[in-house]
Length: 192
Image 1: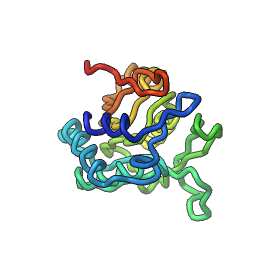
Image 2: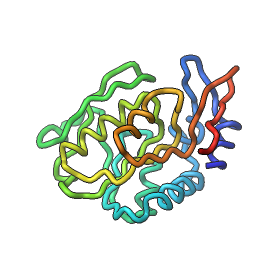
Image 3: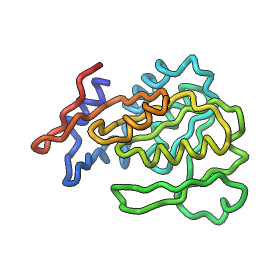
């Protein structure tokens, strides 16, 4: 998605450790028009899949998932990774390691919100090693839902996550695929 790539080049910052900081327009402050454009892209790709629910993980995936929920006219469910006294029983749970936080989280969703047979579109902001996505897929497998597609805002294609997820047969669309970081600059993958 050219608009997103241009925004990353103009406003993103490459940090040590292969980290891309996009907090000024993706995962701290949100640009609603950009998010609706991203939702349009995901909708065009997955509009014929009968999507009945959008699944994401808190916190950074919620904004783009919300935009997709408007476009697909369906509810959004986000897996919680913070402790909650109201979400303790009757949940699907999985464990996710966060590279940027150097921490493992237990993620959970209430079983009543993820029903067997639903057609789910998974949405998230970043895909690098794929651990968050693996956790969301695990929740879906536990619930016996149909994963009809996966939408990612930014994929670090030089890491294994996207390759692994695609090799498992999932239909994955990443709006911006990064080939590498070179001298503090973002180099995108050529369109295939």
